[in-house]
Length: 178
Image 1 (cartoon, rainbow, N blue to C red):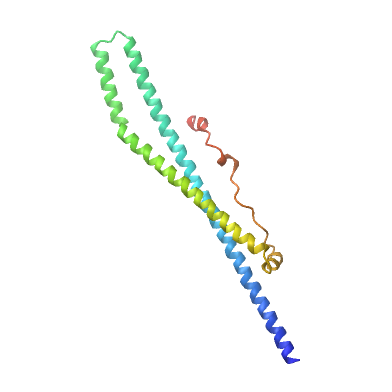
Image 2: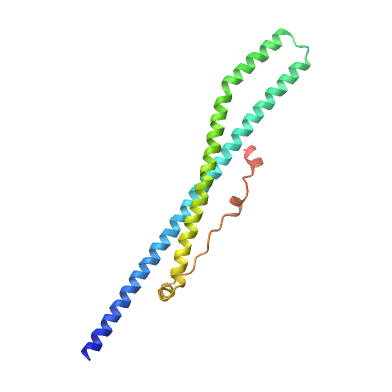
C-alpha cells in the first residue's frame, strides 16, 4: 500500500511539474510572438516613413526642376536681352547652390538603399513572427500540452495580418498636400 501511495504521489508531482514546465513554455512562446510582432511594426513604420521621405524629396526636386524649366521657357519667349540672361544665370547658380545635384543624388540614393534594406528587414521579421506563431500553435495542438493549453485557456494564434492601409502604397496625393 505504501508503494502505491508513494507512486501516486510521485506521479502527481511529475504531472504538476510537467504542467508548470508546459505553462512556462506557453508564456515564453507568447512573449516571443509579441516580440516578433513588435519588430514587424517597428520595421514597417520605418519603411512607411522612409517611403514618405523619399516621395517628398522626389516631388520637391521635380517641382524645382519644373519651375526652373518654366522660367527658362518664359525668358526665351521674351526677346532676351543681356540683363534677362544674366538674371537667369545668377538665379540658376543660386538654385544650384541651394539644391546641388550631387547632394540630391546622395540623399535619394541613401533613401533608396535604406528602403531596400527595410524591405528585407520587414520580410525577415514576418518570417520570424510566423515561425513564433507556428511554435506556439504546435504546443497548443500537440498532445499532451494541449491539455495544459485548454486548462490555462491558451488558444491558437492567427498568422500575420497587416493593417489594410499598410498593404497599400502610401497616399502620395494627401502627403503632397500636407
